[in-house]
Amino acid sequence: MKFEEPLVHGRLIKRYKRFLADVKLDDGTVVTAHCTNSGSMKSCLEDDAEVYLTPVNDPKRKTKFTWEMIKINGDWVGINTGNPNKLAFEIVKNGLIPQFTGYTEVKREVKFGDSRFDVWATNGEETCFVEVKNVTMKEGEYALFPDAVTTRGQKHLETLMKVKAEGMRAVMLYIIQRTDVEAFGPAKEIDPAYAQLLKKANDSGVEVIPIQVKVTPEELIVWRELPYNLD
Image 1 (cartoon, rainbow, N blue to C red):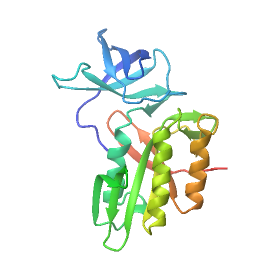
Image 2 (image 1 turned 45 degrees about the vertical axis):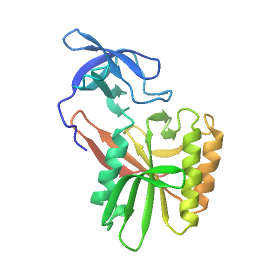
Image 3 (image 1 turned 30 degrees about the horizontal axis):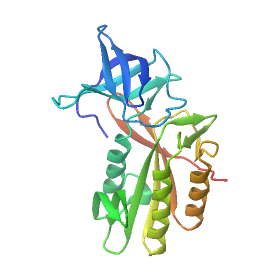
């Protein structure tokens, strides 16, 4: 997934009110950027760290920039929660990993019951619903999700189990926007209910696919599938 226009470089001053971040640009200007990540952003916040922003030319927007990434431990961590959905659509539509080859019709934001899933795909014989989650938290060698309690995420797991029970394919796709981890797992201490539901969903046939992404100022690159441990 390539960024549509050149990003703007700066350094993080602070993140506050969850959705705002003050950034000092290279020319010394201080701007306020929109932060799409509503979680705690644990392990991907550091004052004065390098960041990249997307300029936004929308008169209705109060903030004229969107925060895209931050440099942690010498590498970029993508924090824009909208990008994994765009990338997931490309992955399924173009068969960028073996698990998603052969689909002839792919759509975004398709409803099932009282939930709306990020990606829907079919090849005429098989129907697949995919829920996408952005992963940025690191603990040791693990990427963990979620970084805050997510009742919405729990609901998605429940609905994915219903999808599977009705004979369709159900996938939980975790897009890990950092390369300094070697495996994926649920953040049990932060949201034990989500961790239990994820294990239950996986045991019932919901597929868990953690994909590690290399984040650069030019694009997000599908890098590799990571092993996972739900126990």
